[in-house]
Length: 398
Image 1 (cartoon, rainbow, N blue to C red):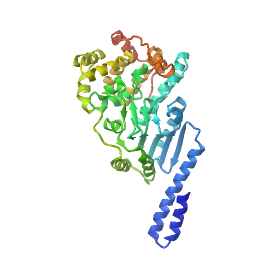
Image 2 (spheres, rainbow, N blue to C red):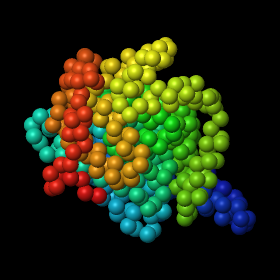
Image 3 (cartoon, one colour):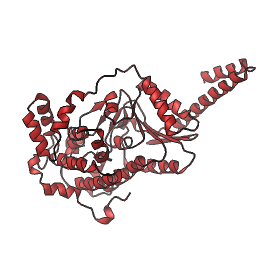
Image 4 (tube, helix red, strand yellow):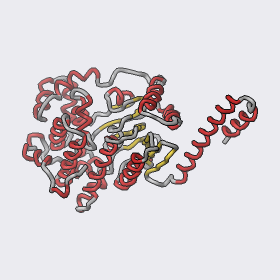
């Protein structure tokens, strides 16, 4: 409120100067607007998702900071209708999505709840993936500029809420990964569409190994469209909300400006730059057996490290993931999501997803017992089953 008092005094002092008065009133209006925004947030602080409509802009805040804003079905069911309503409102010119707290945008989906439901035959195991993918498609086809502040941990379901949108803003706090092969799953939420398009074999490498990208590297890899340092993110949001009638070009201009001014964080070479030749050569295989053979024949310390990492992952997940990405390279987002929904339901019917979640998230012994335990045990017929059509009434409809 101190700033309000100062501005009122300024208006009174410069009352005879019309130009100064106009500027002061404009500043006062902006401050009042942001005071109202904060007040609205406080009244709904217990909600899992917060929604605000500020003039022509919508703001979505994932509000489970203690759970690293992990995405559950109730959040999905709240976000989708609001995004749809805003998209259908011709007055809506921009949507921002962000996460509460300072640790995560969204650390992933609630896979533990999904596996528990799968054990009981509960519909949640079907509904979660289906409705999540429908939301991913909504974001990927959104007709309003969509800006995701991926400030903090952004994995799995959090990637699906951001990467298909027009603008993705990372900071030095961003940690990106698709670590699903470590829990017997696969890089879903449209991973089959965006990962193969990162260039070379980078997407295949990230998907199979679960390698984590941080800070500027998230931008350099092409996952984020912009990099803005953390201490400028609040100011960035304010500047975006102050645009009177924003176009995609206006938004781009503001984001470019903040990126240019984010010089406190050192701009180093891409962390995988020195390894890209090996990634493109050694991860260029149509089968996991080929990739294993490439790494073994290379014999370098780097190749041996990657091979040891892959041997910890679910062999079934890796074979399914490789095919998913190879096929997804030429598929639309919609076709990828239909394919991925089939795979997700096969994961629910198989063994490794449950075992991976147990080992990593429940018992946390980090010692999953995969079935089969080696890639040679995963037959082409088994992989084919993962991609086979579901009964017509169960298929994903977009």
